[in-house]
Length: 483
Ligand code: F0G
Picture 1: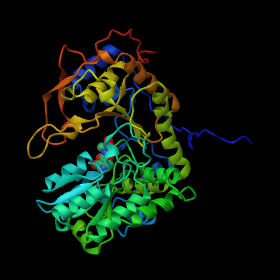
Picture 2: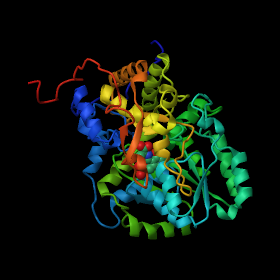
Picture 3: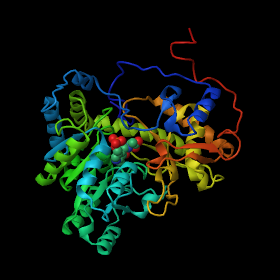
Picture 4: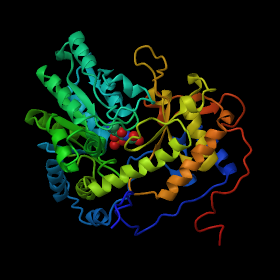
């Protein structure tokens, strides 16, 4: 038998969901109504939805069957115990507290551990994580290696912690003002870049020597485990489950958004090993989420999550998942489109600063690129640059992070390789006419996590993409006009 070089999806399709296709004129109208913010588009106006990999996975037939096994008792649902067993088995933590999604866990962790004036170091910020830390009175301190902020550096583990930065912080503020370090896996804002097992262990050792807890953001820990297997010396013989357990075993607990790795549409959890901390968390979760055996979820959601966790660590699954992201990334690289290297785990991050050198940072090139891509093709991406970074919490100045990106995020088990081809063509086509994209300015700016709900207008004219392309509807309405 010839050796197999390519991967293929380790599943077949049992049910399909029709997509509505639109004309360019319809998309221009839709993006204007959405204030040039792809978060405010209606999903039915989107052709290929690469806004996020969060809650957008296709569940398996086993997970759908699991929904029917929901035990909707208020307290002590059977599904909670299944979830608890799955987290214990695959992540290894002793206490598991379900929450409605990742930020529910971040909220509980932040208010239970942070005192006003504290500092929380992390390997790059994530929007909701940092917002909860700041709302609880802490200052976030970025201790990721410098290369993570450089889209062109192709180090294999750009999610690593810079131990010298961490040591300098401990020296400057004292360990007593650092309640925990937040250790992100497959660092989202850096482009889905992993942390090595070696660096993870060294970071945990350093923190523990100073009595500082390490709380992992395990949201994409399975994808990180895959990169450890593929890229780290001496790890290629291990199973994903084995590496995942190893990663978690060095940390004191985790927050998790199960909407990513764990293949469900809603859900999350907080897990800790410490008994006292667990008691505190169980008490707080009742106030903010729901009883500690459901945490804002239905029993059926917890069952789907328990099954999803087990499916997520299968090598065939994770290889195809990341293989699909690489397939899209390689098509863009071949065409010379500037993207963050190396290709990350959950999406392709296009370098908007290099894509649109004519748009100054103050006119939000990544926001403009996401809007223009939608107008051009019906593909929905997400801004990950200055709009996401927000303002400095003391000075109120706009933050301009080094990375000004759009993210083409790939939902798990949802799109085919042909969808990836169409997406690549759309981005390449836009790159060839990039000078026609116009910068944006705010017309409405919310106080918290502004990228979700902000509205914009073009700095000149009324359109974000100033070209007259001949318009072919991407297709006709699924069940309507074509008949
Ligand atoms: N941590 C990371 C690294 C995340 O990517 C997210 C969510 C969260 C925490 C919060 O989890 O959404 O369940 O409350 N990321 C989504 C995204 C929103 O599109 O990247 P949540």
